[in-house]
Structure formats: C-alpha cells, structure tokens
Length: 348
Ligand code: CP3
Image (cartoon, rainbow, N blue to C red; front, side):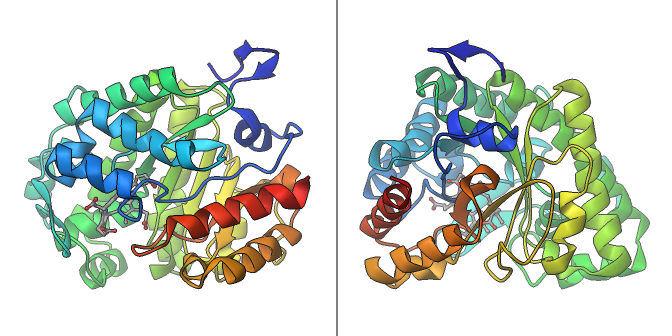
C-alpha cells in the first residue's frame, strides 16, 4: 500500500516523502482539527448527522467531512474524522458530547470496571470507522495522504478516569501511586490501540498519528512509564503487523523530552507544541508543527507572518507544516487559507 505507485509518483505525496526521508516536491502541510466547527460546510453536515457521535459512525458523512478541508485548501493530507474517545466507546463505555460541555464518558476506576470492558476488534464502532477510511481513501487523489489516529494511552485514560474533560488530577494520583488498576488500564489501552491502528492501516490509512495531548502533565519516571513506554509499545506493535507504516507521535507539552519521543524506535516524526521552537531540538526524525493556533485568531497578516517564521526555522525536507495544537473554534476559514497560500508562495 505505502509503496504502490500511480502516475510515476509514490502514493501519499509530500507528506509520505518527508516521513520516509525522500525528497518532497513541496513542504507538506495539514492542520490538526482541520475538519470541524470553524467550517460552515462541516456544521451543515454535522446537523444532518444529528450528534457528533452519530457523525463519527456514519461513513458517508464522516468521509465527506474528512475531505472538506482539502476542497477548500491546498493541503497534503486528510485526517480521518473520528475522535480519540472512539476507543473507550468501542470497548463498551457510554459516550456522548454535550453541547458546549465536551465529552461525557463512562468511567474506569477499578479492576472490576476495567475487566467489564470488551475488546474493540469487530465492534460496530471500529467497523464504521474503518469503512470511513476505505471510502475516504478511494476518493482522495493519489498524492494526498490519509492519516489515521488514536489517542495516547495516558490522554485516553485521563478521560476514562474522569468521565470526560478534567484537570487530570485523579489520573495523575493513580499514576503517582501506581495503582494496579491504572497500570492495567494503560496496558489494556496499548493492546487495543495497536488493534485499532492496524485496522485503520489495513483499511487504507497510510500513516498514523498518536495524539497524547496531555503528555505534558507528567515528568520523570511517570512520563517514561505512562507516556513514552506505552507509545513505544504501540509503535512496535503496529509496525510488527504493518511493516514500515509511518508513525507521528504528538506528545504535547513535554518540551526538551521531545528528544526521547523522537528516539523511540520506529517513530518517523514528532509533533511539537507551540511552546518549543523547531530549531531548539536536534533530532533525527521529521518535525511537525507548530504555528500557534491563537495566531490564526489574530488576522491574516499576523497569521502569515508567524507561519513564515515557523518555516524559516526548518527546511522542507524535514518539516510537516502544522499547528502546535488543534484549530480553535472561532477561527476564520479565510485566515487558514491565507496561511496555506503564504507557505506555498514562500517556496515558489
Ligand atoms: O480534523 C481532525 O483533526 C480529525 C478529527 C479529530 C477530532 N478530535 C474531531 C472532533 C481528532 C484527531 C480529534 C482528537 C481529539 N479528541 C483529541 C486530541 C487532540 C487535541 O485536540 O488535543 C482530544 C483530546 C479529543 C477529545 C475531545 N473531542 C474533546 C475534549 C472534545 C470537546 C471539545 C471540542 O473541541 O469540542 C471533542 C469533540 C470534537 N472532536 C469535535 C471535533 C470536530 C467537536 C465536536 C462537534 O462537532 O460538536
């Protein structure tokens, strides 16, 4: 899949070129949360689907919103439309999104809670998500990459412990104490995440990203044990079954420890948070990031200027242009377009 060629060019275009250390013909670019409520065409489809959760499991509509940003902007990749909380949902925890309040998820706070969860393989949820991957891949141009994803075990566990968004204090406490049920929860999420990413790759995802958005909560032994080791086991487990599948690790907020994320065997790129300059770390893999999503709220001139400053720090051969975190609600789609055009023009 990864190496199949069409029209003389490798499938997946500039994004796969940078991930696989080939010379790209341009700086690959996509945006975390590029599909979403800031786009009027997304809001229209979301309304047709009913709820956000219904949209995630409706392959036709999920595929449509996956592709929408590529119709508007000259991007190099689509990211599967789903959510990191699909994993606990497919394992049997109830999930809904309350308007303006974020996710409401069933909780896991004991070994009994954990043992009540089922394997996600073969679940309705995973079958629907994989159908979205297949539909999307079949309608994307060959030089556009399709990125699959899952959450990092630490981040997903933090939502499972709290039952939704939180300050992650209860998960942190469990990590400090090494509560046996919490250690077992992380282990279980490693196993399930491997299955989930392998299923996405087999359905047509050409690269995968692990979103550990709250990795910066932990330092020292806890960072190693609950963020870096689990991610490393996921990468090894996935690549054992899908040899060569490129992996992007987004362990947000770990600062100088990004060097450790980049050094994990099999990692092809790291996503870097806004707070760390791309010229401040010396690693052997590609860097993804890291325009401040807030710069997109500051208007076209500021956003363009900041985007070009990010690009000036790193050559296109080693860079995947992106944000340091997801696009924020209230972002003007025209500003995103101005950034895309500015990055493209700077290379012409
Ligand atoms: O475009 C894309 O990036 C692909 C789809 C995607 C979504 N969520 C869609 C979504 C991806 C990759 C995610 C990842 C995700 N989900 C993360 C990790 C990245 C990050 O932003 O830190 C996390 C922590 C979640 C959990 C989650 N999902 C929360 C806390 C919320 C509520 C807050 C919010 O932004 O609304 C969501 C909802 C969500 N996920 C929306 C979208 C488009 C908005 C829901 C809606 O349409 O009403």
